Image (tube, rainbow, N blue to C red; front, side, top):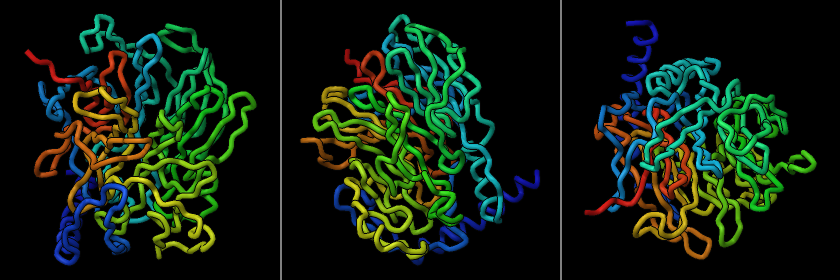
Length: 436
């Protein structure tokens, strides 16, 4: 066994002991879901945070996630390389951004432990840095052609098409490329529209405004709670608005530790996002969340969470805490809710309108959470009820291995819901169950 493997085994043993101790002394807590979640008091984990991730296994031949009753799932495309985000073009082409987390600097023993664990979980490696185009020309729900659409990118994630311009959210900024309708590949050089600091929470999701005049960008923090100083966090943990006519950009909302998926609620025209909250305070503390986003709003990071609950590990700014907005809907602790897609009523039988959310899955919990696709029903422009499962079965019952991990979501060209799975290297397609 390699030195890295021996160290990973030692980390697993120490981690298991820490998890057992915390279970014995902390007790189990109900999931923190909904508009009025019960959030346990913080129990800072110090220099040895809970570290638990399943080993990545992938899917066996014929194996799939488990669809909710009344739904079915099939593989739309397989054999991809860390597919993270999906965008469907007007001509029904399906674009997939393939990228992964890069190894960061290892400053402490915990950093090395985290890196070893992430390697085992297939959560870090060499990034493919490309966008692939998939086509299902015969409409049978399986893409029969796959071509390279765009390469030479820098951890691409979000994608958007407006007119004859195709936008890509690289980790270090938004790049605009000329696009011709129906093109199978872009080879022209891009034009950088806005720059962002790379690294840390590296994904850069994109969402055009309904009128096509602006582009919204999710930019996550570098660190967990600003422990490397706030100077390196300047310009991060925010959603940006880019004016496409002038090229100018501004912070639309801040204090959002890692805002990933972005979506419009069509009845009210309000922007919504899913946010990954901080680690090291307990299994359910604080919960990740789904929230509407106010222009000029501040949502607490790093000083406080779920409104004005102060994080005592952070040097405080009382003025920032006083203006912190309470999010709208808790999604459970450490679920790593990344994907976000509005589903009109009738997308699935028995499902009202609402938001579908890809939960990538936890690492900072004694019992794993996430590793599924859930649905939050809406009524009158607001969340209205408990979450429902759409896809489960990404995680083995004993939590030892993961077959896949869901990330981005999109409504497919045929009205199905497409789900990117970056451990299984699959795009899943979810539809109503066929009868007869």
